[in-house]
Image (tube, rainbow over all chains, first blue to last red; front, side, top):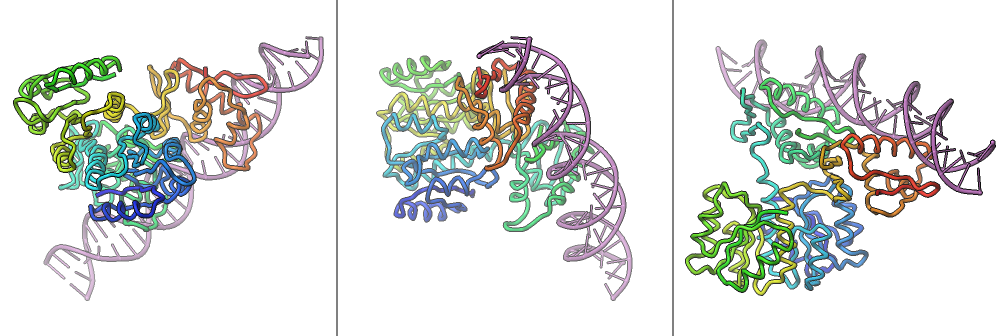
Length: 220
Length: 220
DNA sequence: CGCTCACAGTCAGGTTGTCGGCAGGTGGGG
DNA sequence: CCCCACCTGCCGACAACCTGACTGTGAGCG
């Protein structure tokens, strides 16, 4: 379903979480400490939801989340913690939480809440600024026409349009359009971007792909 | 802040909610029964978040929510209910909930959760004195416009705005914006400050970077 | 089997934006 | 008044990016 970044130091809890998440069909990126989370959950990691403990051995999960946000990681965050006071919760939300669950938690509920968080960002746009992406026909439509896209072109464009207005990093695009672990030269990305741009122009698309130097691409 | 649709039949709870929501600066559309909610919360009602009780006198809040979704109302839904079993919660999420809070609830927490739901559909980013830094888009926004920043510019501005009102030393800025151990001439810092100032001016930013002679910079 | 076509990926050359620094001007504090 | 910190305009180097042409591969077809 999605890629979940899990940061939890206690082995027993981690085991329960990992099994539950895998059972629900999620892919996982696991960290045991705040420092590890900072390394593994970078802005270019294709993470859909972050599950974060607050009481980590090396740091405060809230600080970790704020650090991640400041480097551009914008995946929604669910705090999973023993701190259940209202004040703790408010601090969690202030630190950028999208949800907050108090231990001991019920696995099924956590899974449901994760579904909500993943769905909320996925549903953000079959149609973006006068452009309609048709996954069945592998085509894009605008007011004035329609073009076919090749499979790779389609996956790339889908990755970029899935976040209208946001910059999508080149690595993220690669992760979305090519199978895991495959190497593609930077130049290949450029070529595909060019082809997509040409096709979009051929149907007088109102929105185009703008490049953000040193970062990636963005629909505007 | 936003328009909240509240559907709650019990007067005591409703009163607490209404006062709290108004106090937080929200506008309200109030319903006392499911039927009233269906009438008032239509697809064209400009609602940002729906606060729904489940145990309504005339109907089940979950059915009401599903009916609203089927007519195109897509505002996020927060269920506020006495039913706290895991099974109840799962049913709530299955019915389309974005969040689920069990009574007795803490008003401050509910307000925080509402903020999350409204913020997710609006603009994101830390806001400092009328300026919004968006790490995802690599941009700064003011009331009148938006500019893109280059990676280095963004890191510098982020370092300075991270401590509003305080003076940030030149060394601190360098440490935040350049890789460890790299030497940059004092003049280079000035150049970047200048570029950032120019970009901020181009969007009529209400706050600017003031220099503190011999120490560093500060947002005012 | 050989031809054609579409797609993926590469290469080389040109173009542009970012970075970092220089040189000269400006202004405030001693 | 002088010095030093800072401002400003400007320029060169370099990397990132764009562009058009080209190669390799595999499917479809007569």
